[in-house]
Length: 428
Image (cartoon, rainbow, N blue to C red):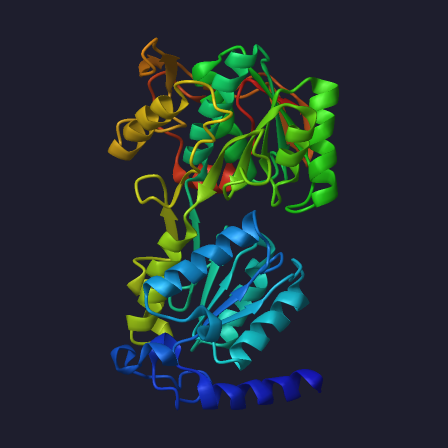
């Protein structure tokens, strides 16, 4: 009975306020009823909705990066985040919680709803069918439909590689070949596997003797253990640089407290740990949000959104400026770091080379501070472990890509990469 009452209230709210893809705000919100002309709607009639895993008031990390991206994109497009952005934050990866958050945003008249966490996927997919006049866009997942529901992610592994260069050069400078990585998950998800692997390969490009030790949280966000695991990597494994795939700046703060160094994630964390932070692999989420919001305002109806976006999945990288690294902390980075990062960025953006090919880079810093790069045809190998029924077991190293071979497919990087490359060790 409660669900029926909620549906009636929401339908009334949408009749009064919903304007799919900038359509006529007087159109009813029931299935198939929206037919507005996007170009006829003034920007003040358009409303964006967002579902966040953490707080909208975060000052660093994952939710912060998305919120900053959405508000920046809205301002670029002449929209007012104070009045045209509705937020449901601190929403757990729980089906009912996400469904309720969506219904609340639909009731507020949102034309497009962004969900930023992987565990929101199924609920958003179902709600996209329930509310066909609203656009749904989900980060990090893989579900979509042909009309009003797409997914978006990017080549974070490219940015991870660049951060790995900074970490590797710092390890050379300090004479410490042990590098730690606090990860939300490991082999279980391609997102984390590809990021860890990209980072490790970047480290190895400048310090082939380095080992990356990975300790898994088993959660995307856990500030207490993010700090505790970083401390353990420093104390028990002797790591002199700490990187991360988790939401907060706690690993960087732990690195600073211990007198070592670190590479953050999602946003520039130098302010959180100015004596430790080198750089961070970051997302320029506004690049996607600008594209998506603009398409939503001009596509002529929610049923046209996926076509307007050019397909069901958006996957940008360094070339699109969707990912990158934060400004280097000149107080902490090793000499030549910027030159090395710039040189590799040029290779990737030009299409000459990418991270998961059968060509290994060897980067050296010259006396004048410039960077030299040699390319070697070499097989890309696994670390000699295997994930079997959720358990990591010993196995023979496997050749992922033959020497000189092309990159692994995007579908592997985003979906089935369940291994670590050679030079990565479990620290659990």
